[in-house]
Image (tube, rainbow, N blue to C red):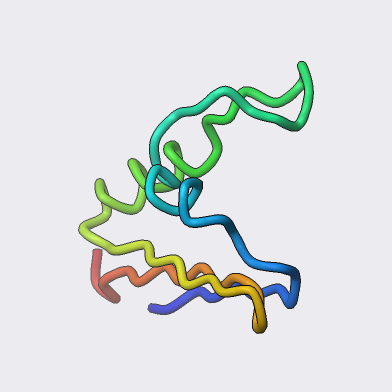
Length: 71
């Protein structure tokens, strides 16, 4: 099963994509913990799946989650 989420924004800086799935201090304000993608990654790993991120300045960012069909 493949789930894709895409945007057409300015992309993610390389220093962010290098640590994308690790907990971080969020720059979004006090109501954001910076844990979202690390939690998603853990859940995907537990289901023997993969999560991928592709990002560049001209076409935006794409996340793709691949999960085995018969989990």
